[in-house]
Image 1 (cartoon, rainbow, N blue to C red):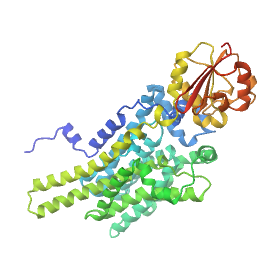
Image 2: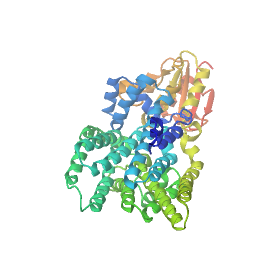
Image 3: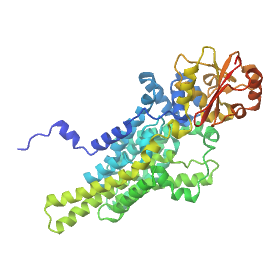
Image 4: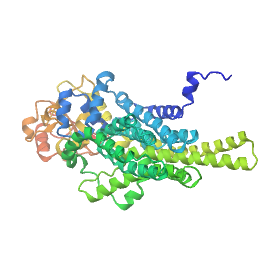
Amino acid sequence: MRPAVRPVGRLLGQVWVWPTAAMLVVGGYRLGTPDMWRDEIATATVATRSLGDLLRLLQHVDASNGAYYLLMHGWTAVFGDSPTSLRIPSVLAMAAAAAFVALTARRLFGGRVAAVAAGLLFAVPPQIVRYAQEARSYALVTCAVAAASYFLLRALERPTWRRWAPYCVAMALAGAGHLISFSTVVGQVALLALHLWRTRAEADRRLLWHYPLAVVVAALPVLPVVQLGSQQSDRQLGWIPVPSMRGLTRFGEHLLGSDQVFHAFALLAVLALVLPGRRVAAWQALLLAELPVVAVWLVSRLSDTSYFIERYLLFTVPAWAVLAGGGAGAAYVAVVALARRLGREPRQAVALGGLLAVALLALPTVAALPKQSSVRYVGSHNGSGEPFKAVAREISAGYRAGDGMAAPLGDQSWAMAWPGVSYYLPSDVRPSPVFVARSADDAEDLSPTPCPQPETCLGGASRIWLIVLGDTLDPLGAVPAAQAQVLRARYGAPGRVTPLGGLTLALLDRNA
């Protein structure tokens, strides 16, 4: 009589447990260290507003992130808005995505080695690590798409509405988190076509109408986001360049964050496609990874708006990890079979296959190390050119009650300098706004509205902390001419100028 398996042992035997734990460790490592960069500042700025102010803002800007902002509004109400708190949902989402990657690989390739390898490989790419530590929607969207892929495979096996329902929910969450994620449908259609071809003798014809109906049901909650997002696309996406053919051929390296990691993943993908085993499954994973990228590239080439940037397509990385895990699993099976043919004992054959699988896992992991630090800390003072924390520290050290602050607004609002520095200022350090007509809340925008007539919005502060973009020793030359004229007339030349690596802080004192 076999001894009963303890619950802990049963849990540790699940293929998703170790990938989830690995992603939690990798994502949680020094989570609060990188400084917040401008996109994360936008999250903090919006999520901490009242619900009414948040909903009014979404009517003018960032509607495509509305679902994420609503989620973070509830999160910050409970857990606060520190950098660590704001980033924890992304870590949890990437950990859940790793679990779904392992489960998807198990359903496609069958073996435990492929499943665990896929989940662990998902935690390797530097870009995955970065967005696991970023207070934006990309991790949650990646998780939702990874979940949708898994639920789709379950529904293909037995197409009941009980199995289609979680697929619809996952796709709706992905679309609400980021509209571009719906391009994964292109890859899913190819996956479905290969499934029907492989099982053509016993294929369930209900799939031909179940799947399109499920996609429509999933898309219905996203339609309001589509309507608002299309009205705001020019303002939010105009900076993305039209992609070239070279941009498409090199996209994998940017998507994963390292050309070495991409080459390692490509090697594992080739193994999955050529070694005996589930080659059709490998093609399904490949099409799920590649077709959304090609579709977005084509749309970006043919339309007036480009969407082709790596973080918008981060949701395709789970499919790449599944495919790479399938390659590791296929190599393991091939080596075990070869060792047995050569007369090795079963345990020796398994050990040899295990050693090869570990080596294949180590290859991309080691290749990722040179890029991990630079990508992980892209939002830091030294890496981003947005030293909001450093500016706030300088202001706090020299602050006097009654001081004013002027920061880039208007055409330079994209830099998020005003909300970024304000985020890091202590609660008892609040310089009065200079050259501001309406606060960000009143303007229903991410940044305050600049005053059209600077002389009427100068205020009576005896000192002004002036923040300008770039590193310069002539900060008044970096502000609009009308503002510079007023400041020179009232305060004269700046008494102290401090370039801080992307922003310059100057102190103007009319009593100096």
